[in-house]
Amino acid sequence: MSLFDLINMGTRGLSASQTALDLVGQNVTNADTEGYTRKRLNLEAGVRVDQGLGQMGFGVDVVNIKRMRDDLLDRQMQEVSTQKGAREELDKSLQAIQNILTEPADSGLNTFLEKFWASWQDLANNPSDRTARQAVSDAGSALSGRFQDLGEQFNVLLNQKNEELVDGVGEINKLLEGIKEDNEAIANAEVGDQRMRANDTRDQREVKFKELSKYIEVSYSEDPQGRYLITSGGNLLVGPAGSYPLKIARSQITLSDGREMSQASLVVSSTRQPFDPPGGKLASLLEARDEIIPRYQGALDELARTVAKSVNAQHEQGYTLSGFTGATFFDPATAGATSIKLSTFVRADVSNIAAAAGGTSRSLGAPLNQVIPAAGGVLDLANTVDPDYRNLSSESVVIRTVGPPSATLVEGSGEDYTVDYRTGQIRFNNPASLLPGTAITVDFRYTIQNYNGQGDGKNALKMGQLAQALLSDPDKLGIPRSTIGDSYATMVGELGAEKKKAADTLETSVNLQTYLQKRIDETSGVSMDEELADMVKFQNCYQASAKYISTVSQMMDSLMSIQ
Image 1 (cartoon, rainbow, N blue to C red):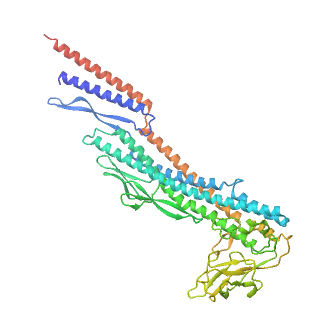
Image 2: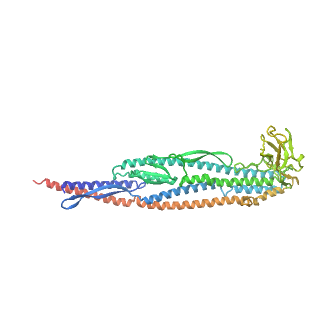
């Protein structure tokens, strides 16, 4: 080996030590950079063959710069990130439902129910007092208002989850595009030379991929050019040719109160097929929007219908201050929480609150056979059929034509007929289509009068006792098993149990993620103590190489000075 070869060997040592020191500086300055992976210099002994001595050292060679990653830990972290993203969203959605119901609290529905039942108890003690009647009206209005507010908040929450889904798709598409760009940068940087590793770009891609795994469950593989090929639920999202973003499709759905809302669904752009996320935040968003929120909203709607139906059924059996029976307290058209309200009778005058008892509600047993009267005439049930057929129960009249085919007529102003429920008179509105003499059947409920006077508060007492009546939660035979209050308490209790379970599972995911991150940091994180030790080591190596070159240089000077 010549002296020039020795100088070359020392130069290679200087270069390797300088590269190693550069790498130490990179690690130290990025110790707190999110997603940064510590780098290590891979060195190997340079070898040459001597004819007389065989293999001899030829200095040091820099093989490459390696990212310190554990692929198994990375995949475990990806799975936990997906799981945590789903559980975070589930916990968040259940917390939002709890925030709507605000139980137990003075603003909770249970408080309004208790005040409503109590107002009837007070009215029973003084049934002719307008102040007590106004208190019942106010309590009923407050209860229906609270129902309406809860129903509206559920609708707002549904729409919020819908928009969060749209925002989530936007974030996913940004990440997919970013990963695609990183793929191309990595493939271009590493082509043709295994030593040219695009380490920092790989770190950036790893951060994006980890964030993507929070939104949806994804799988990946790496092609020979270093590009990630990403799939989810069997759908290709990133391939060698680029990314394939998700798209939002819109459709109209009908809410529980009859209103329509634009609902978002997911579509894969490459196949134009619906995309159902197998996991992650988006899966929980869809579950919350399509299952969890509608389940609790449906239970609230059912509770509102039960309250309206039960109160009306008892109220129709009582008498107002003017001796009228068969009146409803809540609007009979109540379809759910957002539509419950006081009836027009009660809103018009608190004297129409039926506090007195004595009437007997009856059904016909079999519909009456009648004919449509002449144009302009009325079907007077009380005067032409039976004197008891007055004080008809609100919304109880059902009229059908005799078939075949049989058709059910529609009640209401501008419809087929209208009813005076107090007198039992029915007026037909469309003689052109409903010809006089057409055979019809008429079914309804009515109340036999037995008014005991304005001082009677027995029906108000029965109204208050509805708080303890089994009216809700029917069994398979349709027999109610719970009071209205107990049914609501059960719903709140189920929500609390579901929320606790979600919080517990989320805590498990958080703890597991913390554990895995600690393991990953042990492999990929920057240890300042280790880097400082390496700094001293490579500094000494650099100085030794420089000293070696200086020594060889002196040898050459000595050689050149020989005369």
